[in-house]
Image 1: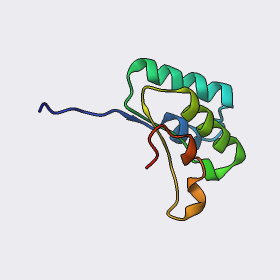
Image 2 (image 1 turned 90 degrees about the horizontal axis):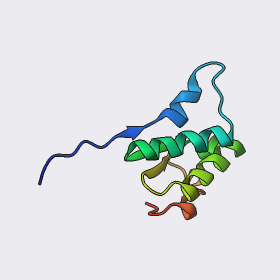
Image 3 (image 1 turned 90 degrees about the vertical axis):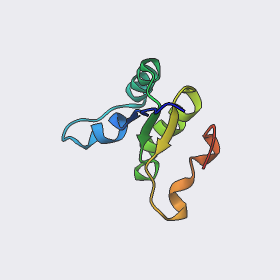
Image 4 (image 1 turned 120 degrees about the horizontal axis):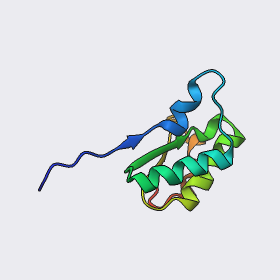
Length: 91
């Protein structure tokens, strides 16, 4: 079996850590679709428990982007896993 490098992109979560850098739902979906078109293997779509807006964005991306695995940053408590029902392959 050949070695394979997986691309794990954190733009949608880490990109908003910079002061003044915020994305709305439409912008996040557009970026996620472009990452899909580029062949990214895994997209960390956000931190769903952080806010209703982040939850909605992760949910929308998980429902509409089909190529990459969609990941969401979560805590170890059970409250962060409420977006799991929308995942293609929940873990």
